[in-house]
Every structure is written in C-alpha cells, then in structure tokens.
Amino acid sequence: MAKQHDVRRIALALEGVTETAGHFGFAVRNKGKDKGFVWAWRERIDPKKARVPSSTVIAVRVANELEKQMLLSVDPDKFFTEPHYNGYPAVLVRLPAVTLAELREVVVAAWRCQGPASDRSIRRPQRSKDGGILGASGPRLRGERDPVAKAKPAAKRKPKPRR
Image 1 (cartoon, rainbow, N blue to C red):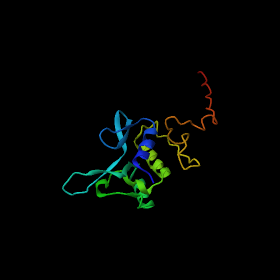
Image 2: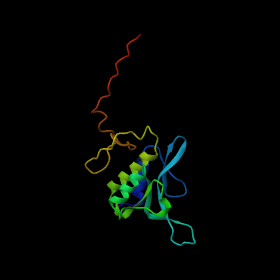
Image 3: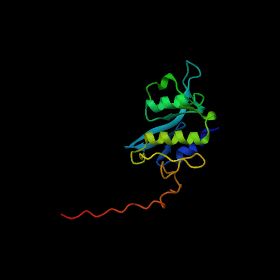
Image 4: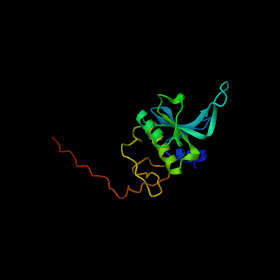
C-alpha cells in the first residue's frame, strides 16, 4: 500500500525533479520549462464548489493514448480515468491499491515522458530482485551507483584517418 510520502520519496530521487510549490505535484525541467509528471488528483466532492486535492489518488503522465489504455485495462482497481482526462495522456492511480514497486514503475515512466531527451534514453529499464528499476538501464537515482558501469568498459574510438 503506497502513500503520498512514497510518491514524494520516489519522485525527488529522480534527476532534475522539483516539487511544485503550493500543491502536491512534481515536475522536471525540459527546454526551459517545468513539465509536471505526477500530481495530486483534484476530486469534485460538491458540484457547486471547487475540486479538492485527494491524498489517496495521484495523476501520472503516460507516453500516449495506447499506454493509457493499456494501464486502464491492466487493473481497474488500481488505474482509472475520468472525463476531465479524456484526450490527455494521464492516468489516475489509487495509492492504497498499488505496491511500492508498481508505484515506482509508473512514477519513473511518467518522469521519462516529461524529462529531457538526454535523460529519456531508449534503453528499457531492467528489474532488480526487489522489483525496482536498476539505474544502469533506467534513470539513475540521486546517490544511487550504477552497478553495470564498471562491468562494461567504454568502447574506445579509433582515430579517423587523415586525408
């Protein structure tokens, strides 16, 4: 069972992430702008009043409509949407229904959608034994060592012949 403090811990561990001032949300800087990738869902409790931030549901960015539909079909108890998000690449996640490993996966995937292209490498993340994502193939977390960096030496470039 995940909680908002787990979302905060995972999001702030990713490179370049800042917490949005004033409400529960996280963004990464891309081309000079802060791009939100995880935020608290605002739920309409009273039709005549403003929406209220939920402490048990978050919204996360997804790459496209196909990924959105895939997540929605996986488990409707964990992932859902509402008419407000129709046509927008985001999925709502019920925190009490997801495990920490699942939460980390969706938060990191959302970060990759919004982060700079240099941080969104085309390599697919590898799973560690605890279900997390290894820094060598996915995004590197602050303070996390890259376990594969020493195992794979950098390829040496051959000098170009002079003409």
